Image 1 (tube, rainbow, N blue to C red):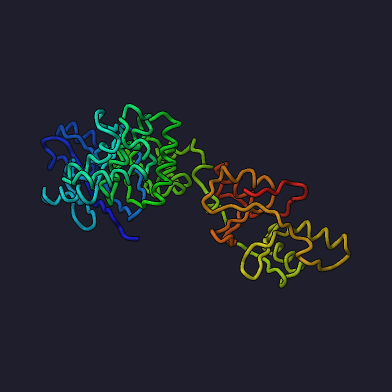
Image 2 (image 1 turned 90 degrees about the vertical axis):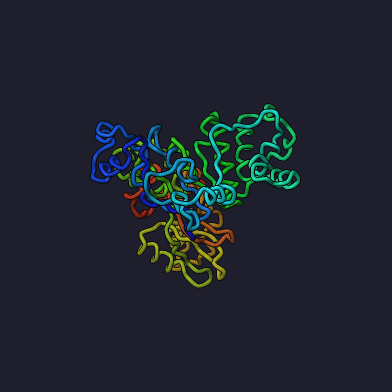
Length: 415
């Protein structure tokens, strides 16, 4: 995937003696030392990262960490003290004012926490504001504004005034205003910070749904780690103007870089961070009409598992067989090698790879391994119940390969 935005060794120092402060900072002096020596304040220090096209890159940090300063440098609102900010190969940090205006018109736009809607303009007129600034004709502004409002579900309110909308709907107008310009990069600075928790979660969900269609490159700023973990394809955690860790949600929760990050993730709901794909393993299967019960029992013993899925010639799941059921059939019938079709269970838990672990708990409690399937219902992975419980408890790396367990009489429900 192509890199859309590349930030290289960016520093921002506020004050009159920035050159001196930068030398002190790069020599290892602390922010406090520099402030005492030069009176300059370090906002961002040595930030470097790449954002791929269509990716949501979340910058998370507490107040004063430097995240808002960083995002304002990305579109030239604040010039960096040193470093490069490349968008499609053009350096925002070192380009002409004319080039910067072109980048803002064509490449990048910003959505703020506070909606700043014009109260006497309609919703459509507010959504078209950026287009009006760009000099677009009224008909074009209306057309693009309505398209953007449709994307955020506000078409019926196009001719309403902002006062007639809820807070969450007003924030969607702000988002539509950004989308109407057709930006390639969307900067979102604490966009949901002013919303109450319920509406905030709804907006997070709506953004994820919208992103599946739009595939915009988004830099999202937040102080809420849960929000960062929910939205980010990649996440950067900032402290004192510096990135202390960059990674996926799973990487950060599983392997915090230091005590600062570990303290943040200690109380995180792991069930919302990890998915079926994170705890699944490659499927070991039996072939319908080819493999025998003896083959299945031998494979389970070799793999130290209590159940295996059975697939047909098209790799579609036919059912699942357990060691216990095969052993019981052998004993009950006196047959050394019962037919798999006679023993396998045709009801089994099945999920998509992106299902969160919280939604797997019920299926895992049934005792059977959970089938992970693709959009054509083909088996692409298997989740053992023990792996779900281990990851939810924070012991995912210590999960053992399952041994034989009793699955008789337990619920076997689809998810």
